Image 1 (tube, rainbow, N blue to C red):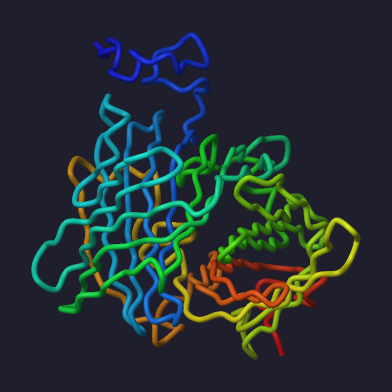
Image 2: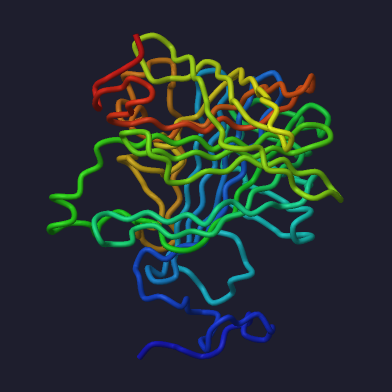
Length: 372
C-alpha cells in the first residue's frame, strides 16, 4: 500500500492545487523540477556546470557536476529514490542549500579520494531573477515540453578540487549564472508509436545566452525550426531597481569552426528602446558538451530522470581533446563560457548553442551539413 501521508512541505501555505506537495498536478511521467548552474573564470581556464532535478512521477532525484580543466572533463553523477522532504536538495555527494532564496545558494560536492572532483562554493546573486518566456513544444498533437523558467546572474566564491589541483574561486574573477525550471520535459524511454515514427525533427536551432556585466544582466533566447521559423524569443536587459528593458528581436551571426557547427565567436544584433541597433559580441573561451557527463540528450551513458537504483553514484573523467571520441556530443547542446562586449562594457556569460539537422538561415541542409 502506498504511503500517502502529508509531507513536511504541506505545513506551509504554498499549495497551488488541492493535493499534497508530494504530488504534482499532472500525471505525465515527464514532470520535472530542476536547476543548472554555470560557474567559470574570466580567462576560460575552468568551467563548472552542475545541476539537480526531481522527477515526481518517476520517483527519482538526481544530480550531476562536470568540471573542465584543459581537455579533461571531471564528472560526478548521482541518482536515488525521491523522498518526502522536498526541501532537502541532496543526492549522493552532491548538495544544494538555499541559504537565502533568490540571493545566496551554497553548492557542495563531497570528495571521494584525493584526486576526485569536490567543491564548496557560495553563489551570490548580483541581479534580480528574471522570467524566461513560457516554453512549449509539440510533436504532432502531443505536448512534449511545457516549462516555466527563470534565470539569474551572480558570482561564486569558494574552492574546487580536482585531479590533485586546488582552485580558488573568487567573486572578482569568476561569473556564475543559474537557471531554474519546472514543468514537463521528455525523459528517455517513452516516445514511440505513430508520433515517434512519423513526427521526426527536420532541424532544430537553439541559443540561450545569459550575460553578467558589472551594472546589468542581459538574457537572449532564440529557438528556430528548420526553415528559421522562431518558436521562442527573448532579449531583455535587467538592472537592479529599474524596469526591465526589451531589446527587440535578436539576430545572431555565428562564425563556426570550419568543418563543424562549433561556434568560435558571434555577434548578437539587438535593438534598444529608441530602435537604435545594438551589437553584443561573443568570444567563446571554453566549453562543455552537455551530452558528455552532464546527462543531457543524446548522452548514451546516463540521462536525467532515469532510474539507476538506490544510492547510485558514478565518477569518471573524459578526454575532450579528440572530438571523434564523443560523436554524440555534436548532436547535443554545447555550453560555452564566453566574453561579451556591449556598449563599451565587458561582461561574461554562457553562449549555449545547439544546431542539428537543417537550418535554412545558417545554410545547413541536413544532419551531416557543417560550416565550410
